[in-house]
Image 1 (cartoon, helix red, strand yellow):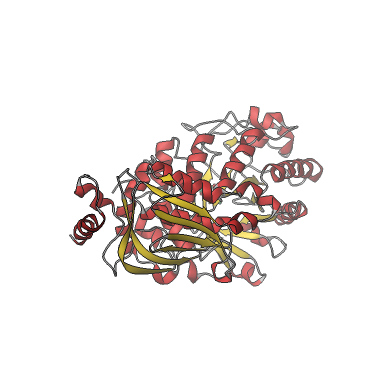
Image 2 (cartoon, rainbow, N blue to C red; image 1 turned 120 degrees about the vertical axis):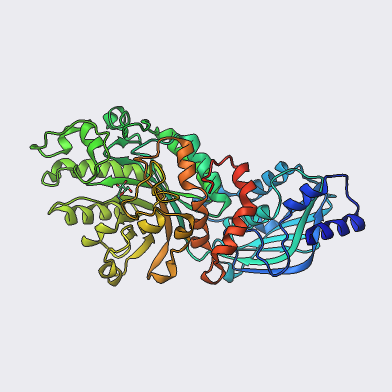
Length: 508
Ligand code: TNX
């Protein structure tokens, strides 16, 4: 009712065209003062000012010169102007032109304010609109917030709440893991996923590239990895692999959206696909050398008593992965295997990654090895005793399965979902109950979608959304702004965004 009144008043004062009032009003992200704006993840500080700003058919975009001059280091050169591009996309979709005589001025301003950090931004919507940040990434995120304040559908004019937002993420790691090894996901899906992640300020896409059921990345000099390992999949799932050219394209696509791709080559267990391709990687007494399409875990391993065979292979693979994925991180797996030489293998593999100039990541079990403290550990069993690793100084990526495993049901008993970690599944509310602040030495959060039972894009969407919005909020928002009831309200208002992104999300 209040919104209707506000709209009526602004039409009276400013004049507006003949649009069905109902449609416009329902789309305005301008709830009564005192109620949260419909934003996910919720910003750190939102100061609502009374009244609204109306954008008619055009805006005047001003990129303050500094914003172009103070670009980050060469490594990130491809990110240059990603914020402006993102803004131009938003405007184009709403049929707003960028003109020197535009009715509203929208400024992208590079500043130097330590309180905004590397990814934070300020968004001021008063008479005019100003987005300021220390970095291109910060500007990009400011634009994502601005975008959520706008409707998804075309209107003749757009009403924005007057606000002053100061925002930065709680954690630098706001991730999602996709298992493309059990069942392949096409590159187009990954691109769409990166777009969707970026909309909600998620910034790490961990790709589980290899497992027993498939090897999904081209490695030069080992053609059978993809000829044989790329041709298998879990029963009912999809096979396939990414060529090196495709990976390079994906990397630059992700960079432009401020998402870092984190490749995982699962070693030394979960390696049946590699063994089926190159039998010599298994010990001589192993008779099962065939491709695998079941769902068991923990039965395969590289032959750790033949270091002269396996380490050159591991080194070749990791070296090529490092070239393909320029990001800071390489995940070496390390889960679910028993072998007396396991700790030695993990210590060697993490050092190989470090020798390539990267940060190594291992699943929690890797903590038994003599790793350097810089190795990141990914916690996945809720009750795993990670304290000894914390004492050694390791940092954690939090993926405790009873909150963060999205291959588990959206509800108890959902068909084609796992429940080994939590028999009630991982409903939205459960996912929201993870409190990262209850852990120590946390780099961030990451939800995981294993794909033994996820064989199509539609099923992947159903498992990922809307739960991934929880990951976004846990990773970004401060503990004191998190409130599940409010979250549900905001989610409800943002459903048109999921629709616009063509997400086949799970509906209650
Ligand atoms: C455990 S979590 C696994 C995966 C399975 C998953 C199924 C982890 C590091 N290993 O191999 O796909 O359970 O939920």
